[in-house]
Length: 96
Image (cartoon, helix red, strand yellow):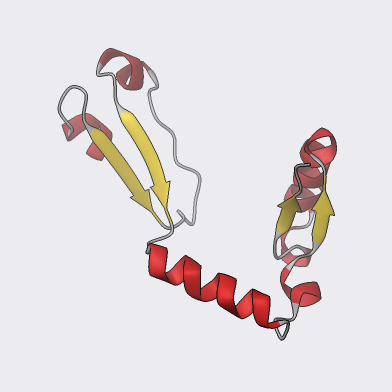
């Protein structure tokens, strides 16, 4: 509904995740020249707190990061996640 209601050159922000598949008529993105963004509803202060926690060395990284991959193998990692989403918590794509 937001995509239908937003004005030309407007912005639509999706907060969180849908529990089911969502489809859009992408022609509106182009015709209305929309800015579509996603957000987990976190603020910069939240990210700084997480960084400090990670720097302390007490964060259980092995429990939080299921797989570390390079950009070249990211697609394969995402396919593995899609096949068994309950077994993957987070995938970290590492750039050099």
